[in-house]
Image 1: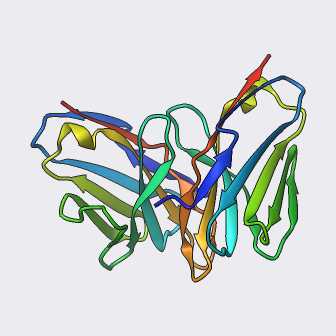
Image 2 (image 1 turned 30 degrees about the horizontal axis):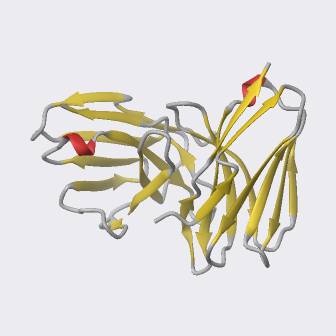
Length: 115
Length: 112
């Protein structure tokens, strides 16, 4: 149980375009989902916390107009990287948790390359 | 922002040996979790330890927590080549158990 999927697993896009990444909890309802970013050989940096039906909460230093997060249902959150630049190239990972449980379950990640 | 630091940054051992990784964090916590990440992949949850627990076991894994020192350790006994991965600790903050912040990670290489 507690499987989280991400789509796509990798994407290449041109500078200036927008890219949407989906995160789904497959066998449970996730009250909260999280988006992380990971640079090569580095740790995960929390970008934002997403609760179903409400606005995402962004960590300090993360541009909310650039990284649009939508959590439309208890099983789906999306991250849209708008007007992508090469410096946005990274590994984006989502996670999901059940209400009142601390464990987070991670998706397999999406590798974004902006050319 | 990152919450913790792990050491060592890299660890190379022979199959069958034990591997110990340490994690230190800065603020009071409710829970601490350990995760494994194989290269370029997502994270696998290994074990969660609560702030009122001192030690926890799961198979070949043993986790300790010392809240007075704000540190935790992960011991992998009888390591296998398949244990080769990066290991991260993640901590919440005392007044917000929803969000977890990751340490810098330890890259473990188990040589066959």
